Length: 232
Ligand SMILES: Nc1ncnc2c1ncn2[C@@H]1O[C@H](COP(=O)(O)OP(=O)(O)OP(=O)(O)O)[C@@H](O)[C@H]1O
Image (cartoon, rainbow, N blue to C red; front, side, top):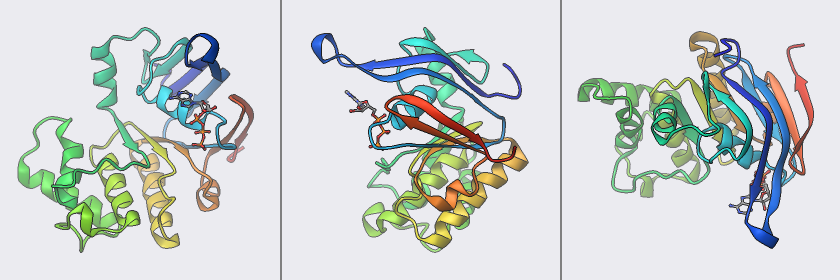
């Protein structure tokens, strides 16, 4: 891999549908993401942000062009390689996909299980620690049904981060969070970037996050129309 860029997309195009209904959603996307940085994708509804995020995150098949992720080409990659790469990624999407029969802590522990078998005590401790960091230290044993939307979102954030991923992909992760919690989540992501070189790519319209971003990439009608390096 180009060690400075855990993600590099080149001449990336993407289409949905077939025949008459076939419609191009992304046009000639070129993007390099710096190691340990926070990159934010913005743009109007339907501009292709989620499509791009899911392509970079191995959640959608690359049809045309190239994505180099952690030193591996995703275009034409085998299922086994994609599975191995996904284990190195953390995802926060709006549909939290929490398990309703598991407590907050057990849900976060699930985020560790793809990484092999940590002793249960250590896994519990890591999950409790992360839940404490997102302000849910007093809700460890609550079921999702007894948590608010914002609290469930925080559980999803903790689950994405607990496995110490190389890259975090997040779609509006702070949408349902209050100001303080949102700031905490962003501070945590920034700290992971500094201390562990964790790279984050996030779709968001949250101004509090835009202020903290290293790069802001604007999409319009499937094209990158602006890319601002906030540190330049
Ligand atoms: N599964 C799909 N099948 C067909 N078309 C799709 C599919 N997913 C997205 N699209 C289309 O691709 C384009 C980009 O959608 P995408 O969800 O990436 O936009 P977005 O910028 O994330 O929007 P939003 O901010 O509303 O979430 C849109 O025109 C959308 O209708």
